[in-house]
Length: 446
Picture 1 (cartoon, one colour):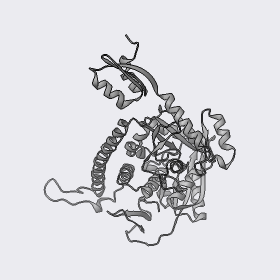
Picture 2: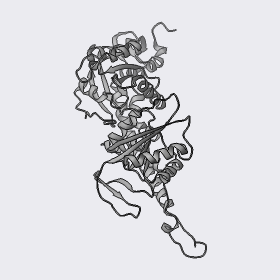
Picture 3: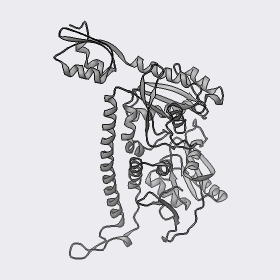
Picture 4: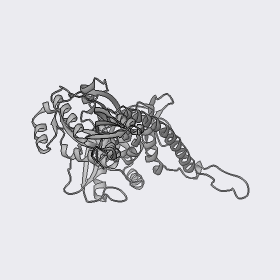
């Protein structure tokens, strides 16, 4: 069930114990449990421009993944949502009638609502209202497995909920006594806000420690001179299936959104004999909540530090080009927009659409992560892209510069090495950064 707070209306929430177990329940406005585990019946709404797609396919998939059944949809055509109620007054009345006819008990919005819009919609409709961000955060909370993943999701949830805290008035205030202290005292809202901020600070501290550990691991990998390749793409595009196909990684595979949150890295041998580190990453989605991007930034650093991104695209999706642009938007946001990209159109065995898409994107490949078709072409393309991004240099390094010799062996691939009086002669393959560093020792340079 989607675990969010709904104010005065009936509240459905998820309680997580210290041991990671969850307990679902419902609560009435007077705080008494009402019992039951019935599946929530969600009514999806959206405000779209005149030329926008009226289909709410992605929101339906998100709600189904979160555990809610979609019982109806309503789309209003206007350039911008209403600042107070998201929908205009006429559409709001139409929505009330639709809700009564469908027996929905939850309204889900395809955009992120402001706290004011959420409160006003709930007051007007008399039932819980959630937005797209809350649904995505709930799915992430269901799928988080590792200590780091759970901390990242909880931090994102707290950042989302902090501006949405609601007090219950003076009846929950702490009464104080004495001259100068009489009055309402500290409200429950202030207490809750302080607790959330304290918890956020603790999570941020824990994540900084985990981030430092991850950076040390990546630093060790860089010293091994093994190129890193990251699988990126829209959620449920087949990245984990592809990693299993390439490396027998045994990663969990599910036909659901955001099944993989924690990056997995495996060693892979390319046809030319080179070894690379292949990493699976969290899937992206349109309008990915800013809170998640910030919380998962340390995890996504594996993408920014990669030598090559294999962008996996589901060729059978209704809008593959739109998904490609959505992924590239997120890559730009996390600072990976300049990393070399190889498009891999997945599910080539499902029809001719993958081949048509590849024809519109020169240099891309068609694969089937499930059957293994096209994998040799993919591996050959990865090897070619990595070699093309490297630079071969002839270096002459004096023996008294032992630090440079050590750095060349550490950061580059030594192809040929010979020695003469006073200097070592090396032909090396290095990346762009190392090439600039060793440029002064290039043969023929005055």
